[in-house]
Amino acid sequence: LQTVKADPVPINDAQAPALLTFTSGTTGQPKAIARSHDFLLNQHRVLHDHMPFRAGDVDLPTLPVFLLHSLASGATCVIADADLKTVASVDPAPVIRQMIDHGITSTSGSPAFFRQLADHLIRSEAQLPSLRHIYTGGARVPADLVDDLARVLPETSIHVVYGSTEAEPIAVLDAREHRDALLRSTHRGALVGTPVPAIKLRIDPIQDGQPFGEIWVAGPHVNPGYLDNPEADAAHKVQDGDTLWHRTGDVGQMDDQGQLWLVGRVGESVGGLWPLVVEGTAEAMPFVKKAGLVEVMGRAIMAVELSHPPEDWMNVLHDHTKAEPVQVEAIPVDARHNAKVDRVKLARMLTAILAG
Image (tube, rainbow, N blue to C red):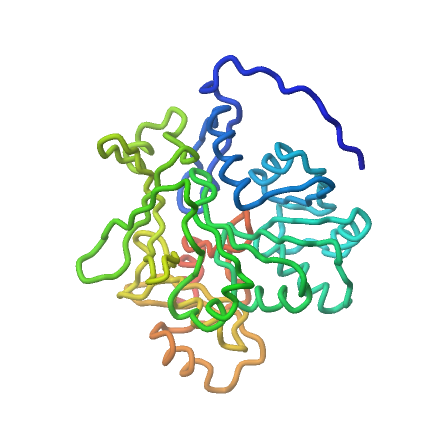
């Protein structure tokens, strides 16, 4: 590995597009965003406060925005020996070998990616003495994953980073420090941490009598609009005086400690049940590998992947979640992170099962 130093290229127009990226399209058609040089610099500055690098650091990033930040920080970057199009099924052995051989000090990726690494470390009892930091996000981070990573990597910090293509990061969480909250509070949704200082955040009420609301954000690293897409701008951007707000589409609330909790997306509530609350509660059961809540024919149906369930598993899950459980072999997930429930595909699947 060799670090190459070079003089920076002068930028004549900081607002000129530097990079074209797309939203994942998990909840709709992918939207294009033209990131300017100034936007990328602001994003790098915000990330630097939460993902600092020091001389000699070697990073293994699997998320593009973190790769850009690592390179801008002067860190040596190692490209994972894995097919990152399907992170939920990567062979972890070559990646672990890279981390050992190159003395990886930090790595970032989807919860599905770290599930593979954690399972391999548990089986092989391999050690990663150089690894100081893990950054994960892009989907709800299961409490049992944090627990497993904490056990097999006792000296490694574990950070949950909440954000989106339009705004990264929004909030960060020291998962080791808040490990007990993650393990015990699955019934509240997904804990994603404290909003970063550089961002403005508000909870916009979506229904009277509910404690939850849509999360709106604003700041220098929040993208101001989509590329040639006025309909998307009208749906997701709100000008309020001097502040341009981005509507994330995520629903959540702030607790008394200033921590942000997510419960789902706008429109995903089924009979008053929110997906991340129901799914977190179900996955806290030792026999539930994964859960996904959707509305089917007016009913709150929860698909579950099971492992050695008790005879009364249906009653247990219904009593704890108030949703109707249906066992499936595999819950469809998003293409980018292989971790978010693809609710459109899941609803079609369950409709076919229940109608058949």
